[in-house]
Amino acid sequence: MSFSDGQIWFIIFALGMGSFLLRFSFLGLVGGKSLPEWALRFLRYTPMAVIPGLVAPMVLWPAATQGHTDPARLAAALAAIIAGLWTRNVIAAVIVGLSTLYAMVYILG
Image (tube, one colour):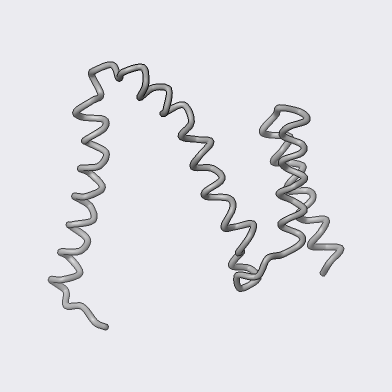
């Protein structure tokens, strides 16, 4: 399927406006006001909901293995979770997970 130059520029403009309006609706319209307590309570959980959604596909269906689950990535994710729960330190969890991933890739080939 091929698009004309005008269609491509329209798509770029529409996506840019959509992105701007989404950000403006939250930051521009609500930015100067305080949010209700129930909304603040829900917003506290946003990072805990987004991070697993970003990480899980990279662990379970990595592009490096053409979408097949890889034991090295599963071991690294498990090691990072255990290290994070044990130390309560994000940097330690990242270092343990990274070290485990490289060690498992080296061992498994």
